[in-house]
Length: 380
Image (cartoon, rainbow, N blue to C red; front, side):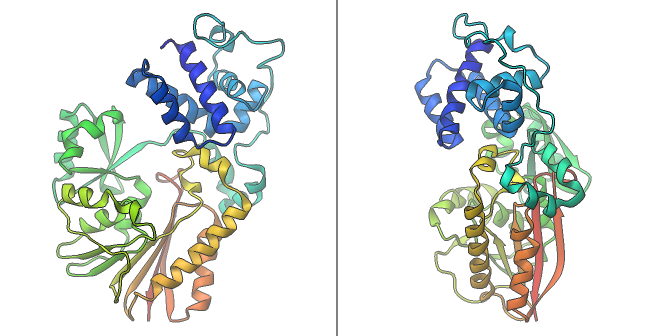
């Protein structure tokens, strides 16, 4: 595909997304209907779409309309390129620019939804604008070294053999940032043999902050794909790991991932008993991950956020029943919004005076990877 054809494809996909179709669904439908597009074309179109969604408001202002066409015009202008060189109407390129098209200004335009802006600012304080700006950029790819299979040095060498470059992070030896050829990961030996797992730096730091010791019983109460279950498993030997999720289908890949990682995990749809550590990575707005899932930024509504906060409170209450005196409850979200984080913990502690907060961690793209929150609680 020519650059113009890729822009045309992105325009069509964005129009479907703006009409209400989820981004991944719109991309998949285009891909299935465009057998002529190679892997490089599909990756390039995906990047165009996601870049536009990260900067939806500002690119629409630069492009002159909140449409696929307007977003692509604005994106070219934001990148310092003349849209007229791509919008030629030749071949599969989009039609030439109309009079006045692509002459707008993005001064003062925010890429945070208007209704959310006050809460965004109150939650992030002096960092609000800088974090919003960071959310306009692509997120780096992070890997967690599975120390049950390899040392960080072993993993880096294996990745290099796969043609993938990665460097360790000074804060956590098992965290590697991919610097070249991240799209080769799923086909490489390092990933296939369980030496590394895809996991952002912030949740890696959160898992490293949990109190884990050999022989402990650990319940991952909202396990999903099991990334945190596997991260905890690599921390100590002899852990009794139980994974639970309200939707068991979310855990369908966990047995295969656990086998690849060399870990034993028991899946339980209705866990019973007490555990030394209960992890609650609660459903949330995902506002800390909007660099990776930018369409969710625009799909979130105020009523939906209220529903999420209520659901988080219910999940915390249920999970707390599995924590004995002397046990720990780790509450996590990939959100940067205070009602889902400190507000949620404060409300829980008011209703559960036998719990206390031992530590609190909050990461943003300014100091780690995704936005992420961890509160470690203990039961007296």
